Every structure is written in structure tokens, then in C-alpha cells.
Length: 119
Image (cartoon, rainbow, N blue to C red; front, side, top):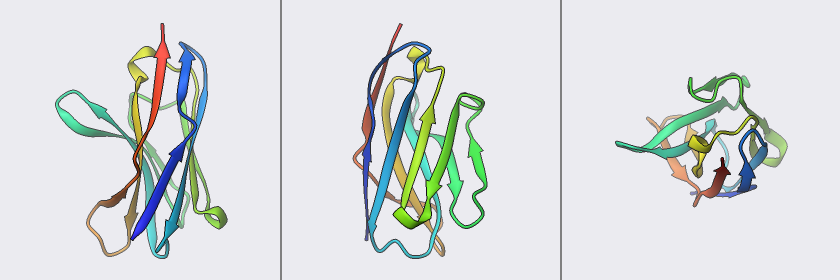
């Protein structure tokens, strides 16, 4: 099992910034990617950003491209999400997740951290 703990959420004014962190522990070998997700209308969770662990290749949802940056520290098993130019519509609980090699998708999820952006 992999345990994930997110932190860094909070209340920020529009156009402000926050940095989320997610620390993975437990059976952290063979991580293929770590990602961030948030709830969206009509979906349980929508993809926000992904970091492929070995190659450091990143992917972003169109809605956050140019504003959010995902990065990681392999030695600390930690992934970060730097969120700049925040908008009220970014308000959500942000969840960290792990996709391991040999598995079809993200099978390990954190409890989430609340981000609230005021207008």
C-alpha cells in the first residue's frame, strides 16, 4: 500500500498563489506517475496535472496550463503543485494520487487538501 498526505491548502484571494505538497510513504517502489486531481461538476474528479516519475515529463489540464506547475523530489517521494494566478473557479479539494507500473490507473489517493479562492 501507498499512503499519501497532502498539505498546503488554504484561503487565498484571486490572483494569489499556493503551493501544495504530497508526501508518499509505504510501498513507494515502482511509481510510474504522481498526479493532482480535483472534483468537477459531472465528474467524480478531474485531472489537473501529472508528473511522470522517471522522466519528469509533465502534463496539465487546459484549464490550469500556464498557471500551475507540478514538480517532484524523488528522494523525498514528494510531489508539489505550485498554483499561481488562482481563480475562484479553482476552489476545490485537491487530491494527490499515485499510478504504479503494472497498474492501469491511479490506485492510491490521499485525503485531499482544501483550496479556497475568494473573488
